[in-house]
Length: 272
Ligand code: NDP
Image 1 (cartoon, helix red, strand yellow):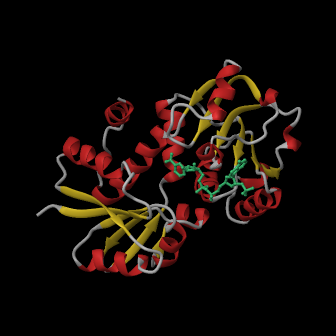
Image 2 (cartoon, rainbow, N blue to C red; image 1 turned 60 degrees about the horizontal axis):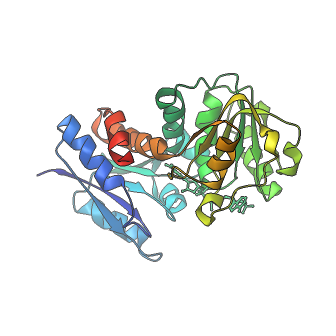
């Protein structure tokens, strides 16, 4: 009998995770069955408990339940504590372990797949929602020269910075601001962690925000977004979040199975 895993969310039918984990299992020879599971607002915790009591070994948690998964976990990794959200549950020795693999997924995509060195880079993170909380700690672990968090609602950017200053030893150089306050500033790495692209919009960035040789990264996995087009129009290298999606899944797989899959062919397959 294969070991059972699932991704739980609402909606969840669009999720690429079952396909990604099926590829990881095929590649590594791990005997794993991974399915998508729809939960309603009222039955998330009960659905997790049911899956666990029926022998499930672990779950990925997607929107809108990452905060509730954080609350549900009995043991949490440092990454989950920093993110205030959990996207990976592991059911081990009678306990529910919670982790967050989004940030390490982003960092691996940037450093391994895109070949960027993050240390010493002037980094701009746009957005102060769940995705930004998830990636901020792992970005700080790489020791950027500075990490500026810009958000439409400035108070949320300031709150995020305050949260990380209280938790992360490298967070002294983190600052929050509005988009207008970016005028005249240049960054080597600009990450769009807003949901603006979903509505065909982009944050109101000053045009000269990219330093020479900069990378523009949109966490949404769509080759073309208004932000990526804005960057390309200025001759800036632009990348979407598909690699991050696969890398965060690979980290979950590693947590559950103790083996690291080869992500490159899976990213290539999803690009077809
Ligand atoms: P949240 O709803 O928690 O946060 C949304 C953020 O976007 C807020 O900061 C909000 O600003 C900002 N925003 C929304 N619309 C606009 C706009 N028109 N202009 C400027 N800012 C805007 O979303 P999440 O943080 O959970 O997700 C953000 C994105 O990250 C999504 O697109 C998601 O798909 C992607 N993501 C990708 C992953 C991957 O593996 N590739 C993993 C996780 C997330 P305000 O506070 O002012 O409302």
